[in-house]
Length: 181
Image (cartoon, helix red, strand yellow):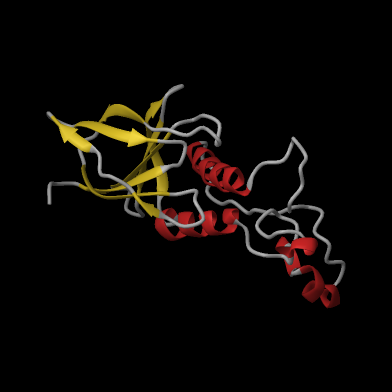
């Protein structure tokens, strides 16, 4: 909401941390997440039109002074749910100071996606290449955590099951196929 406080995050960082946080909570077994702030202002049903309802101060909308506009975190979580909402955490492929790489599964527990990111400060720019093993094949790739999804480069699959993937602070999702297409 335009505050200059040093303890506040940028909208971009908030959106990124929301998506990464949801992924890490899924890794810990959380199956449902509700984004809510206990101090929402609606005191009764009649006041909801003035404070924009349940999520008026949740961080998904700007402040009253900024017109309760939808924030980047709203769009990032919306894209997250649209692309990965029907998946569940299946396994850690890699989790170290350079990369978090998770395997996600669809409703029938078949590996459906790999998601990877650099577990560092959101304001850090730049990408690194990471390697890991997967027996699946990459089909398409995109990045989450922005105000809208962005197309990403497919990982290079060299040798047998050896992947090399360029990752940044933004989670990159790779849709999988069990066999080469």
